[in-house]
Amino acid sequence: MQTLYFNCFSGASGDMLVGSLIDLGVKLSAIEWELGKLELPDKFHLHANRDQRQNVTGIKFTVHDESTHQCCGHEHEHQHAEHSHSHPHEHAHESEHSHDHEHAHEDADDGSEFIHEQGHEHSHEHEHEHTHGRNHEEIRKLINDSALSDFVKQRALAVFQRIAVVEGKIHGVAPEKITFHEVGALDSIIDIISFCVGIEKLGRPRVLASPLVEGTGWVDCAHGRFPVPSTATLELLAGIPLTQVDEPHELLTPTGAALLAEFAEGFAPMQGLKTEKVGYGLGTRHLKSRPNVVRAILGEVVEASTTAAEEQDTIVVLETNLDDLPGELIGDAQEKLFAAGALDVFYQPIQMKKNRPGVLLSVLASPADADKLADLILTHTSAFGVRRTTAERTKLRREIKTVTTPFGAVEVKLGYRGDKLVQVAPEFESARKIADAKNVPLQKVYDAARQAVS
Image (cartoon, rainbow, N blue to C red; front, side, top):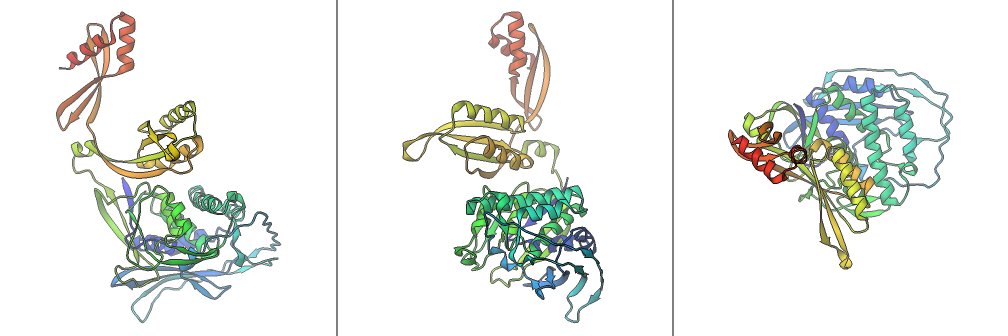
């Protein structure tokens, strides 16, 4: 299966992730063409420069905001969105767009390759500028009204929805009321759209990521100083393992966290990936212990052998503690989780704070279904959060077989370890149907089915 693995040993930001995709072969001109489908009121152009971080060569992706004459370095993203309970936006657009695309390819004297640049010329009359940020509804409208593909629209909207939910939780505001500041700024919008475009251009591979790391220290936010990781980053990565390293900087930005949380099916060491291409996206920092890069590895997941592939896999374990949900609603949630594709759902009694009895709800899921099932837990139980861990599972190769017994045909499940049969389990519903029809004890049907296999 075509797989894209992000090795985030030095954190991740939106521009670093986009840079890694460009280094893998996504053309900047293709990203520019897609961005041209947005009715962005800003004047900007893009840079994708080949540079180095601690002798590692890669792509530094930069958005140049011509209205402020700044190349956005994306280190500002730790400044979180403020909010407003009433934030109307009035636009008077006499929008005559003239997209003058100027392309230039040249090699810089210092050896770093200047790959591409595009100028977007917009003629707009605004009743206000977007220096204050954009609210969630503005961004949704911007994306929905564009001519972007359905895939890019859906995934970009999902990323912004994640951020809006998190910011709403932090500030006690409904997600639709949130105004994005840094994450709603020009460069962050471009980073998110560009990443979605890049994934589509690569053929929509399955996305995986390494365990994530973050630095230490403090960041200055609109609401004061907060320790790293930032509040938004922590919320976006709920259920995803995060480790701090000895670097006194923010390494993982909210935009980077939101993109990885939305796209990555799992966060674990690389396993069985046959490398085809490797790309490096560069950050702006020069760190003491590691190069400030994201490494993107594109390849195919190969199976060492049929037996090994069938006996081992990776699953996600979702857990939450419940102490205020009636038993019948827990049962209802269990049924819905199974119907949505959970591998297993079970609960056990636990003792919670203030001596309250509670229930530990556990769900085993495939990495592809983990986000969907976590959302279902949050929707259909009283949980305020879901813990997520990735586990390696060793399992028997399974086969369903119908055997003939003196009472009739019964289905049995066979479990093989390699080529050796080690488990025989009659299927309950099949055996019970025969037992009821023949009016014999269920145990006799079980024994007959097992004997028919041996």
